[in-house]
Image (cartoon, rainbow, N blue to C red):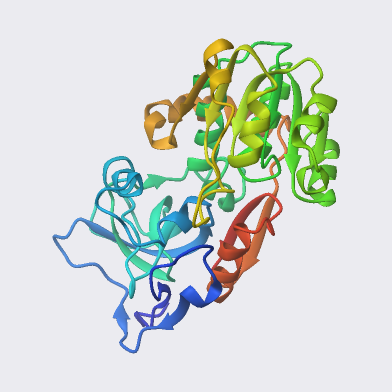
Length: 355
């Protein structure tokens, strides 16, 4: 194996406004070589990155932080493992890596791990927040960018911990063909719920109906009246809404919620990159229908991760769950894949395969 390399990275060129574009990112190969060794006494580990996760929240971290904004508070207080991106430096996210050198006795050369890494071929990282992968579990390594890491915990915590589902209830999932939405819908079916999803193409709607087992689904881009679409697919109303979109979708859902309905607010991807965000007009419904509406982050439920694995691994082994990934090969194709995420170009969990 090589002892020195020139590291390839994806760098943020400048802070973004509006929707991120490929031109906001650049591929850089370091002019200097780096030694594939960690310094003795550093307690660090060096890893070769294999898979990287593309996630919607990453776009919000490409904007200039405002010390008085909620974005800054999220970055500093709740996502302490992942600082806001800085121009001239690599962007970062969840990745799967192989340990190639270690000064931490808990990790050995040849171990596979997942955690937050920079978008680059090789990284020197702290062992804190690094999770060793049990290779006896027979699943693709790429699953640890999604269903067996933050994405899976997000779906599990939002649905089970916040929404407290009951058999026979009606569930609506927006962005249902995405990384989180596909899991929420299937978790709901396992609970015996009636499940409807929305997505942005015929291909994705077919996926919801024919692969993920949703009871009904619609293409929101072909629906001039979202309220009518929801009444058509969910005439009995909505008990649980898993919110990934925001804006007009949320407004329409609120009018179709049942009394004592629950809404888990995972994301609002339709609003992240608008100069002026859309207002929600129907919030008064929350009062007279006594709706529980709660925002959350997966990091709020880290203590439930082992409980989640106990739930999801048997489901995978028994093929009770289907998990779809959209894998793009090559770090150089990472910017296009990440930007495509904000325009709904991915089908399933978007992953970059480096090696």
